[in-house]
Length: 402
Image (tube, helix red, strand yellow):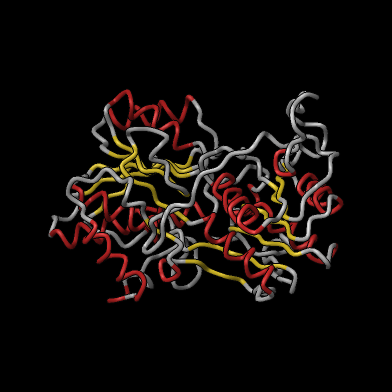
């Protein structure tokens, strides 16, 4: 299904941890950056010390050696942008490098390219871009700026042509995607092992990363139900894509109606969409599952989060850039085997699902024991045809697409 969604790319994609072997990255924050076209926050008062490069709000000010371009989400989204930025800051602060982020004026290709150009003119040696929507801009930028290195998180450079795009990653770029189906699988597995049988999935746009999270969630619930010996149809899942990545009254109302119908826990997957589920859960006494980063601090309703170690991956790739081992030209896939996806067990609120349970299923994913990892359907069938949620091979789990 990876390419069937290109037509909706005018939308936004927002779409660290104790992952099958990691630990949370420290949180950090920064003042709101400027957009390429005068979308800046208030500059510091004259009496204040001059801001550091990563805090400089004026887009015309001097740039930095490491730059990050946000997608349409915000830098403090407690999700994809923030997790990526924390990785940039983590590396820069530990290694004496300057860093800065830029927020494009809009979500179109020209705005992304303008932000990249601004970063390069500001002296950026390496540019980090989080999100599927950067695939075409990086495809162009990698040749337009051959002396700059590009790290594309959650995608691979391509020309965006339909029906079949041409993929090409130059030596000064790398594309990274995550096996989101694996943390999704772990979230569904843990929820059912915890005793929940009435689940919900509230996704944002049906872009590949969100689809993989959702399909993994369903299949993880199925796997746990089989292990527990539950009867066919014992686990029910309401499944919906909102079409965006913002917290909206409509999404909150839908989530509230699910809780009223008996849904016990909702996996909110897609930028701020999860906040709609959290708000509804807080009122209804329900539970939620966070996404991308550890969202336990967002709401008391969060029992765990399906995470990608965004900061860890960025920190690793920046280290490779500076030590001369950068995997330029490669298309990387980070998974449980790399310790870069998982659940934050330290902050999870489980009563029945134990660390030993988690370690055991993680080991199966890492080693693909009994074909656990390789059998997870990501978004297409064996023939490469798109699969709908209701078309997954599920017997214990019944999916209702809303």
